[in-house]
Image 1 (spheres, rainbow, N blue to C red):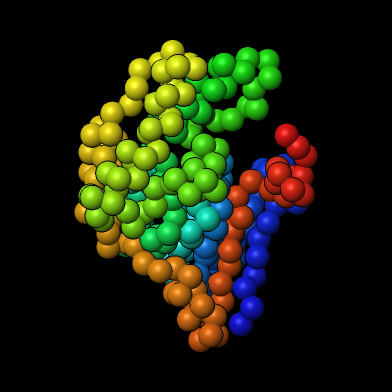
Image 2: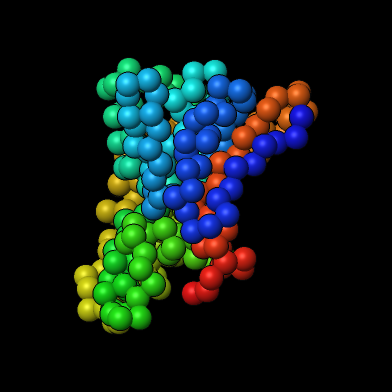
Length: 235
């Protein structure tokens, strides 16, 4: 069966989360396919109100499988904060599936995001300072850290070392900030690995098989069309 795609046609805040929640009980999979924790949606279930930033709205629909796809950039601290918050309120999050190819937001990208905005002053873009833009830039530049990298310390360390070669130069020489150590970044990311591992799979294959089997898939887009660098306003 074809997928049903939910995309905002303006600058965000169109009510995508509410619509996804209403459709969640009618579909088999709800897939967050882009963005990070820079956006948010509020979902009301009965008398309960839930504010989500990173988790797909489908996490609140017991009959569907919520998926974080490979186009998402993940702040792992936020991911587990949201999971813990929902579980404390009795929500079952065990159905959550995370793409092995999704990129994670390392601490140095949050630092770079904030100091770059301050450096730009009146010319700043207006980011949320959560490292999302720099992480997407790393993805395009092929120096990003993916979820699967957390399960091989040697590979993870090599990638962090490679990324910090340039980023520390910028932090120290351009922004007059302290360098970020490889050990600190690797230690932080590895601290999430064991808890993350059971959720991780090849979501592309999972969803292809689901569609072949006649399942209904609802991809949920973050942000909106007019925020897109090609189809929206620029910069």
